[in-house]
Image (cartoon, rainbow, N blue to C red; front, side):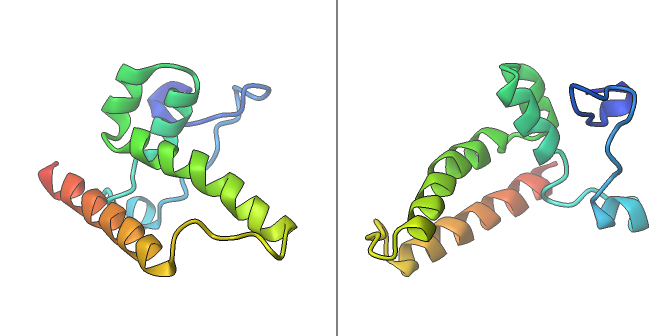
Length: 108
């Protein structure tokens, strides 16, 4: 993290990444996902309190990513890979995550 909560790579701390949230850039409003990237970076650095301040659901998104990415890689590498969950379960998982993100956003 650099000044103003912007994110920069460890090898280029003087060059923060640009804002990618169109809602923030065009309207000046936070969206339900604003702060997730900063929260994930703080979690990966072991700073749980800062991650919570950036976005309260960062830990949940990190948990989903750490299980989902290896499963997707295995599915791509092996055509016979047996999916663990039917597509309906994924629909409920991601629909629930979207609902939590919007609920967290509305709770402010």
